[in-house]
Image (cartoon, rainbow, N blue to C red; front, side):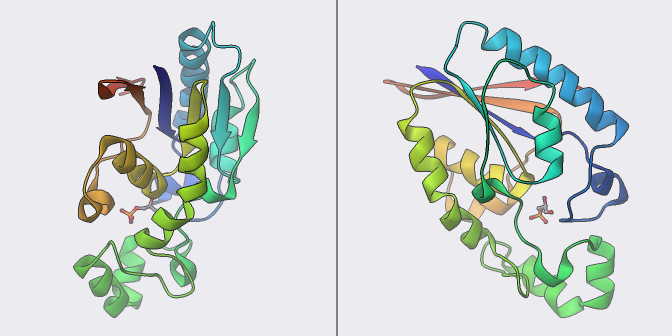
Length: 195
Ligand code: G3H
């Protein structure tokens, strides 16, 4: 069995401001996570010479990977956060106030709701297919550093969670979810690196 390690990027400056989307860097707290994550990964994968680190193409995941030494890093556009289209850069408050119909339709069906000129969870799930195929094919451990919506979908695939739950799965910051795929099924461990 070989592990797949899933984690969100460290807290971003937009996370602090409550803004969705964007391409901001990390907050000071997020910075600390990059060091803790590097430490964890370097210890956990010490003897795994062929392991690799996968990120999205967004700064906050690339920065989160930047302290990890000794493994190749690969950027996937398919690991980018759900595209919030016209709502990119807004807070949920602003969406509720300025686009109440959009806010309500998303609340009603978060799985199928597609942001105008953006994506739905179903779109994200679909674009993750090549990533999942590649993850299944890998024999070495992979660390996936991505985003909340994307990791909900990836996690649901490996943990065999129903489609309708995906947009509501808890995916906390600064936590590593380790998935082990063995002959007897999937095992899961969580490591919370910060409070
Ligand atoms: O910016 C996007 C968020 O990470 C996704 O969260 O789908 O719960 O709004 P949400």
